[in-house]
Image (tube, rainbow, N blue to C red; front, side, top):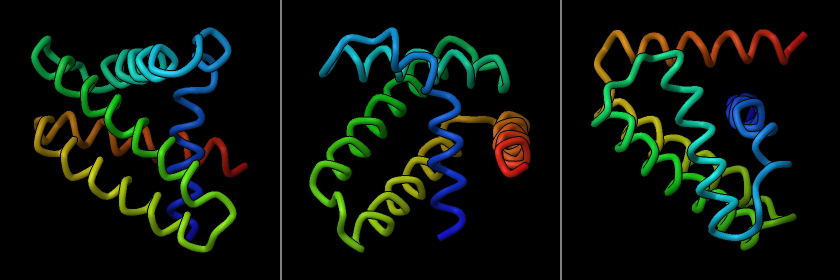
Length: 118
């Protein structure tokens, strides 16, 4: 359960500034995915091909999260569904990133978690 909250805090930390700037609907998801990908690129040093793949992955993940929140809001299944999305996301991300990039991503998650946990 704690991992789900950590993942949610991480995503919120990456996406919070962009939420105020974004429009609504599909454009909002695209904007949030672009900001998230840009921040990840700063940490992991993505090349152009990886950037495009990660941006699509982020867009898909954000769409799934929004769909699950709408569908399971207020139910016990919400946490489990979000956890499954997070696991798929990390699995797919590991297939795109090189090992050193994945290590940098993991370290940045730990840093955000440590910072938010204070």
